[in-house]
Structure formats: structure tokens, C-alpha cells
Image 1 (tube, helix red, strand yellow):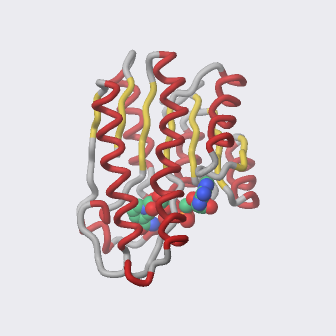
Image 2 (cartoon, helix red, strand yellow):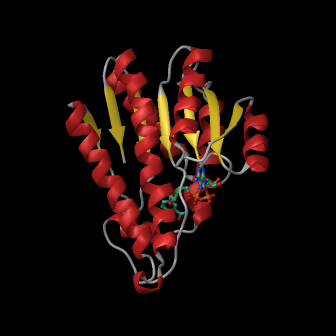
Image 3 (cartoon, helix red, strand yellow):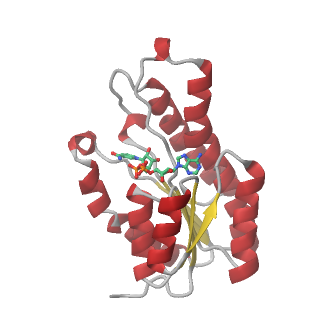
Length: 216
Ligand SMILES: NC(=O)c1ccc[n+]([C@@H]2O[C@H](COP(=O)([O-])OP(=O)(O)OC[C@H]3O[C@@H](n4cnc5c(N)ncnc54)[C@H](O)[C@@H]3O)[C@@H](O)[C@H]2O)c1
């Protein structure tokens, strides 16, 4: 096993379960010091324990909690090399049936959460002059199905946000959209292929050296 992430400091949001947990394991297998960030304490602690990383309870909508998580990683390890901004919630309801409260919850976690995590991670990455951010969007950002309006809007916002960050920072944005075929793929297949996420982050790091890169 290669150790592409030896000594690298990695923060994975939504790392308690699913794609985030599989990514956290994959980063750890390659030598990274991983902090799992989530609101699911039981699974978050279990994932972190399994990989010799640590868990931090953070609701990604909470500005202070996100800032503290980034600052803690930097205080303890001296830097932040990779952010996987992955925490998200699914939502299945037609727009006309979606209440404002429900809408704000989906946008809050899926879009505002990504904004906050990117903002505080980038403050550190700009300071240290390097870093890689991988954001989990969705095919729904480009083309969606009935009953997924709030989710699609949140993921479309994530794509636009990532592009905007790249232009603001004048950094490289490597955008990859999964094809619509992916929507037919089972969630388990996505999780099995999570090594791709780690590969992307490794590529960004290698390609970037003294630069920051972003990936959707
Ligand atoms: N599963 C799919 O088919 C699929 C496809 C494309 C994109 N995605 C995206 O991938 C990401 C991960 O999805 P998954 O399928 O692994 O789902 P999942 O539910 O297993 O993982 C999402 C994690 O985010 C955490 N989370 C939810 N709200 C949070 C909050 N406010 N603060 C911090 N953590 C929070 C959950 O506790 C959970 O651990 C999501 O952003 C999802 O939209 C999923």
C-alpha cells in the first residue's frame, strides 16, 4: 500500500457513514491523520476509532464549530492539507410540498455547510500556500428528477460555489461531473469506488505543490 498521505492532515465532513467513512478509511490507509467530522456521534467515534483518527462533533451549519474544528487540526498538527466537504442530506419531496423549514435545512447542510467548511479551510490553506479541497456534489446538480428539487438546488449551488471559489482565489479548479449513469448505480458501488476520492485528492496535492486546488 502506498503512503501518499503520510503526515498529511485531512478533515472529512460527514465521515461517520457512507462515502465519507469509506473515504476516511482510504485516507488513513495511505497514512493520513484524519479528523472525522459529523453529527452522528456513535458512528463517527466508531469510524475514527477504527482508523486511529479522531472524531469531532460538528454540525457543518454551525460557524463556530466549523472554525474550531479547523483550528484544532491546525493547532495539533500544524497544517490542513485536505478538506473533503462531504456532509449532506438527501431530500425527496416536490418543491410545492417542501416547507421553508425543510428547504432551509437542506440548503443549510448541503450548501451553507460546504461554504463554511471551505471558508475556514481556505483561510489556513492560503496561509500555508497549499491544500486540496474535494467537494461531494451530485448528478442532481446538472439534471434531476421529480421530487428532488431542494436537493438539486443545494448541489447546483455547491457546483457554483466551488467555481466561484476558484475564480476568487485564482486557483486551479478541476471539475468532474459524474455522468447520469451514476444515478443508476447503487450507493454501495459509489462507496466501493471511493478510492477515486482519495486518488483525486492525491492528484490535486501532487499537481498543486505550492498551490491550492479545488475539485467538485
Ligand atoms: N449516495 C449517493 O448516491 C450519492 C450520490 C451523489 C452524491 N452524494 C453525496 O455524497 C455525500 C455523502 O452521502 P452518503 O450517501 O455517504 O450519505 P450518508 O448519509 O451515509 O453520509 C452523510 C453524512 O453526513 C452527516 N451529516 C448530515 N448532516 C450533517 C450536519 N449538519 N453536519 C455534519 N454532518 C452531517 C450524516 O450524519 C452522515 O454521516 C452527500 O453530500 C450526498 O449528497 C451521495
